[in-house]
Amino acid sequence: MLKPAFSVALLRYVAGWPTVAPLEVNMRGRILLLGLATLSTSCNTAGFAAVSIRPVYGFEDGCNPVTVYGHGFDDGTTVSIGDNPMTNLVQPDGGFDQGFRIDGNVPAGSAGTFADVNVTTAAGEKSTIPEGYYYLACPTTVLGEVAPYADGATPTDGIASGMTIVLSGCNLDPASVQVQLGSAAPVPITSVCGTGEVSFVAPDLADGSYALTFLDTSGNVLYPTTPCETGGGGGDTADTGAPADTGTSDTDTATADTGVSETGGDTADTADTALPPCDSQLVLTYGGAQ
Image (cartoon, helix red, strand yellow):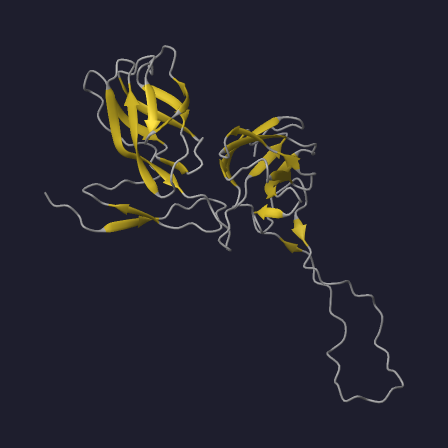
């Protein structure tokens, strides 16, 4: 059989990543497309087997939800990614999916590695999806520093003040990170699952859309480093910082000419500049659909 001896670089564009490196996938007779909704395999054979997992990748911090598909899953079936067990396992209680799917949260893993997905029944039968899951490295800033990052929130719209918001992502450490929505005061985060899933209480804001910013405990912005325009709910425009013209004319003095020429007078005030859209920043909406 012909075995391709080359590799293909797959670039996963994740909104908000300052830098994203290509994922080198070795083509050992097959191509694993990271980001596909599922790895499809026939499930016509009777008995027990693990078939697929989706999504097929996630951050090294773990905690993100996945679904494992197959057949013959009993009530005591467990799942591990590599050598580490998945947590919060739930199977459908009746219905068409019973015995065919398991939902849960993945454990933390090593960035840049594939891991086997191991499914084991209460009777000890084991089925493996070889290298079925890939661990992505946490994003970094342009300076190479690890940054807190969220790629999802629940909910994202219909938010009201005082509501609990759950964020999933990477490097979300409550000891060193807090969040800010729009111009509201920063609020602390609480761990739900390690540093991969946290929650916070929505601050008091008017209806509108607000970009989420991560700060350190001193109030310094950690991510993103560039503000953006949400499209509503906060008037996000930036002044270029040029000082206003005072209107005072230049006056000549009685001192002797030093021979140094004038630079040209007053600098004109630059108009406010619209910010770029928030394609790289998580946006949450109060009081309606986004």
